[in-house]
Image 1: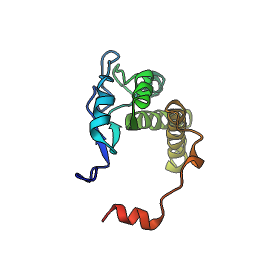
Image 2: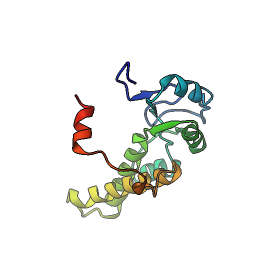
Image 3: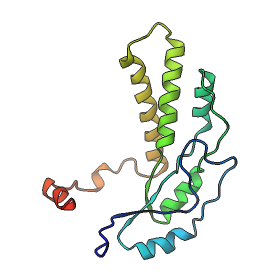
Length: 161
C-alpha cells in the first residue's frame, strides 16, 4: 500500500456483474484469495459482482409484471467462505436493485390508485433495507457498530491528499 497508494483491490475469482450472471451456480476460485491477500499486503480485498440474485426477489418482479429471465448469482456459502479467507468488501448492488424494483412493482399492483412517488419509493427503500439487513447478518457484520472508532475529520482529509 505504501508503494502504490492502493487501499483496496478488486480480485478476479469468478464473480460477474449484473442480474444475468450465471445459468448455474458458479464455483469461485476461492483458493486464490489467501495467495492474493498475501501479495496485496494491507490493501482490502473486494469482490465485485457478488450479488446472490435471490430467486424470491426475481419471482416478485415477475409476479407483478416483470419479465426477468432465469439467472443465478453467487451462492451465499461461497461469499461467506471468501470473507473467512480475507475478503473485506462485497459488492451486491444487483440484489438491492432487485428488491427495490420488486417492492415498487408489488406496491403499485396492490395500490393502483397511487400516483405519489413518495409512497411507492418508500416501498422500494424498504426492500433495499430488508435485503441489506440480511446481507449484514449473512456477512457477519451486523451488531458490530461499536467495534471501531470512526475516523476524525482530519484523518479523513489526510486520506485524500
